[in-house]
Length: 266
Image 1 (cartoon, rainbow, N blue to C red):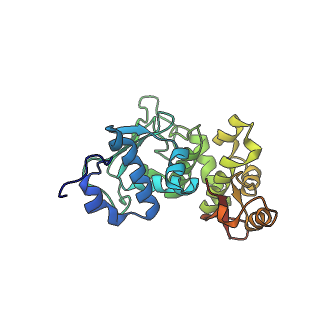
Image 2: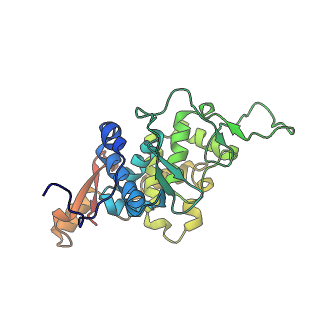
Image 3: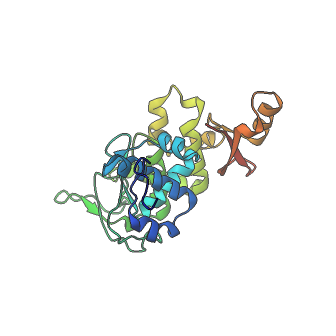
């Protein structure tokens, strides 16, 4: 039999992904890209709304790994994300002019003022009454501030926007007290902690997080409901609640001793 069996279902994948893009991707990035291809090209659509939880279920990756992979794919201009809808909408960029090695030192575009995080507030000058700041280069921020704001925007419903000047100042201040890694861990813990199950507005409001170092410290010591420290995992195994094969290691999330956390397989 020379041809393909037409009875076998398949999803079309653009040749450039397999010819040009695949060698530039990590395993998690490739899994997420294929998930987006399946949800779009696989159903004859250009774009589709896909939740983080759907991507977790489809790939078997940890939530934080999915978020990180989406961030990197967006930076490399392999996918585009529409944050104006919930769940967010994704599409695979059609042009083969990709920036596969990460963001350029000098940005090649500007962002509009209704998009998340595009400028650092100017504390030296009063805003002009004659001219509103509608477009501005992302080079005016520290890269850490951008990464922290984008991490928050991927995890929570209430977004950090460019006109939130007081909040941007609070993020800068928090970066003087906490490392980028600590802030990301606190946000990850916050997103899945049982403490916030009935506190939706508090959980998703960045003004209830960044201005308060004590809250950040508290979130640093919370444990997401679906994650377990090594001892907790062993306790569940020895107590007969689970088999060790029921767990998978989440290497990108660490406990207070720097050890990988464990997650129950879905």
